Amino acid sequence: MLLIASVFATLSILTGRQIINIRMNMRKLIETVRQLDEAGQFDVADLQRRYDHYNALLFDNNLPTIPLAYKKLKSVGGHVLCHYRVDRPTPRNMLRFAKRTLVPGSLHMEISTMYQRDPQALDALLIHEMIHVFFIAAGEFDENHGAKFIRMCRELSAKVGFTIPLTDNVAGLQLTDAPTRKIGMIVLTREDGSRFVALTPESYMRARLDEMVARWNSFRDLVQVQFVITSGRIEAAFPLQRKAKLYDIGFYKTLRDPAMVDEALQAGKVLATITPKRG
Image (cartoon, rainbow, N blue to C red; front, side, top):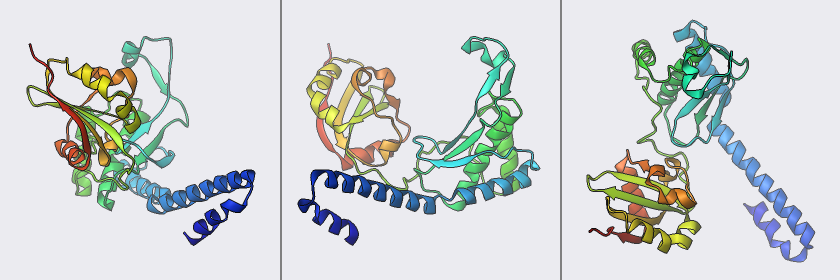
């Protein structure tokens, strides 16, 4: 911090070009420090060791060696990605019936850095994703979280002595580093008590607030609409929306973790609360 402070203290006696170069170098320095910090917190080599251990213990070393990575994934704990070839042109809705071949080198796994986990929870998530690798490597691209997947989860849970999650749902997990930027949140409440949420940049909400209030004030199926400026872990659970999507309930996400939105409402500033007009 002393180095950064001393650099910026001298900006007033430098030329414009020198100031720009120093600022660019400082951004690179800060980004490098951030990456080193994240690398220390999320060790890919350790993840590979865990993968190799469970590949031998649970899969008889039949899983392929694939690239593993930590990424800032929102809404999921991790995922397995791949590409496959289809033997002939096939409509999308008929792909599951087509002969498909895995593209060599395309299979890889990413684990989210957004959520806190103890070592056992990390192992449980890793094994969950390794089951996906098992089915994809076997050419069963559409198994996802189907009956075979669930059965294998339960069988391997019995072997390791802890529960392997049936899904990669992150509800209830704490963020590793809660976002500090302000965001806009719109909460729609229906007559049956169900709530739907959309997030948008703070600047967009403030600029379009009157327009959005007028739009939702005529939506008779709603009993309440709240417009809030907030921050926190909710940002990791919902994508940011803009423009027309904010006026279409189809783009709003069903709320599965009421505590998350209640927390965001409590921590935020309510700009407007409306009860849509009836009659």
